[in-house]
Image (cartoon, rainbow, N blue to C red; front, side, top):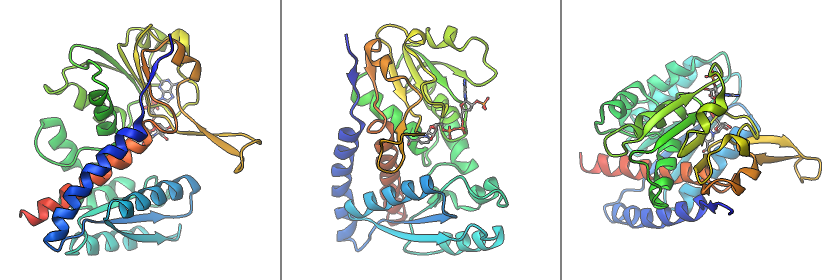
Length: 291
Ligand code: NAP
């Protein structure tokens, strides 16, 4: 039987609708949640991500301040802009679109954003708070995945969840969130040195692919009825497409004939990442108001 398609677009729209109520409550106090969005360089994928984020902010009645910087921007100039935004009264969140050009130390930039405005949840203080289960901003893509699992009432507690990918922005934080006592999954993390990937993926009640490799996960690697979450967003050449490429995930579409649940790409995890970002910006603005 074909899998239930997890509609991330619909879930994200409902979250965004609910956020409008909080945005309007802030508006009554004279506060407009505001995110500073910094993009260095002209990478087309990064540009399309920041444009989508800015559009979503505007639709939700929030403000975005856009900083488009040339690719030869120095690390010092970027640090100075972040310092200015850290101290800016009307800016509640700061997003530096990654990856940054190679001459800029990414970790140094992430550490420069004050944790109270770190709506991406990448600062070491935010990461530490997440691991310890203390308050702080949670990273958007992992929270988007967890929210989808909750919305579709997929049994996470007691599940064996296998994550393919161990990046700092997806795999590692997701594993941490899933082993917390409010999720209670048993988690296996796979990476490029994992021997016999299929052996692990076949054990998964919930399989999360976050490798950035088109069609890495094929039907024979998936347990019948498993919930499959595809985080991957890959551009593959397609001469029939208007812009010469199409987007695909890390999961072969044929997996939908074997899985119990599956997220599409696009329309699965991607819109959830944006919804979680908006949620964090609203929370940052509320935190500021509440002192
Ligand atoms: P990343 O930093 O490149 O990390 C990829 C991870 O996958 C690494 O840990 C790598 O292992 C592992 N991996 C790669 N090929 C593998 C293979 N053949 N077998 C097992 N493990 C493998 O990527 P990322 O930033 O986490 O992003 C992953 C994907 O998610 C990308 O397609 C990205 O575009 C997408 N993404 C989507 C969203 C969204 O909102 N939907 C947000 C963020 C990222 P090693 O550590 O051993 O190299």
